[in-house]
Amino acid sequence: MGGRDATMVLLDENGIRCDGRKVDEPRRIMIRAGGLKNADGSAYIEFGDNKILVGVFGPRDVHPKHMSDTDTGILRVRYHMEPFSVGERKNPAPSRREIEISKVIKEALEPAVMLDKFPRTAVDVFIEVLQADGGTRCAALTAASVALADAGIPMRDMVAAIAAGKVADTVILDVNNEEDQAGQADMPIGYMPSLKKITLLQLDGVLTPEEYKKCVDVGVKGCELVYELQKKALHDKYFGKGDD
Ligand code: CDP
Image (spheres, rainbow, N blue to C red):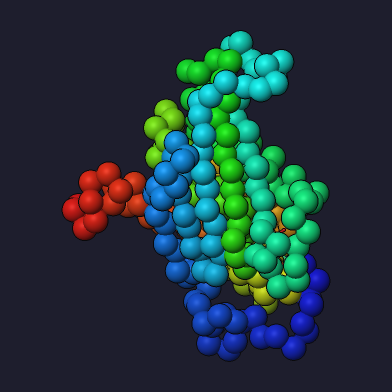
């Protein structure tokens, strides 16, 4: 947060945001299941101007072996941004931010994946951010869930994710890059809609208790919308497009 561009109008007098959306309107979301023939499962997502590809491998042997667990499988997640994914070239080496986001996504997926069915093995999730525009962790988590399902990994539910936030003292759904930089709060939420359980909740910024509750409500409703698109992506791949 921090008002990078003080002249930017984040919310106009008609309640319209800097990219033309209403306060409760998500960006355009397109999810495709599959696409990578060398992966066990994959997915591609466009979430506004975010473009992210996910490949899933496993369950497979763990190397080095001492990292395996005799009681359960392990989940490994690597979130990586391409150097060209942002305006200013990003160093391809893993940054602290990418290490943190990898951990956050792993912990958000773990409650959904039935790792206990595959002791001694690992499931690897590789996330490549091709283009970033705010909210990549939510878009990546959403696509990773679809890629895991596409790989046939047994799951309790899929995790759908979107951010709620605050600009101009107003709670909004799906925070874009400008709103993230110049707004007052950004709250990424990951949610398993069938189980009604939150697996990711972060908050950057300051909210009143009422705003906090409203952000969670708005975010959970947003996740329910995202969930429908995740299911549709899998349905389109396995049962054909438009075949409801
Ligand atoms: O992407 P997400 O909102 O989950 O994480 P963030 O750390 O809040 O980053 C917000 C946005 O900042 C990213 O989505 C990118 O658009 C941008 N960013 C950037 O321009 N350069 C970087 N090295 C890292 C992030």
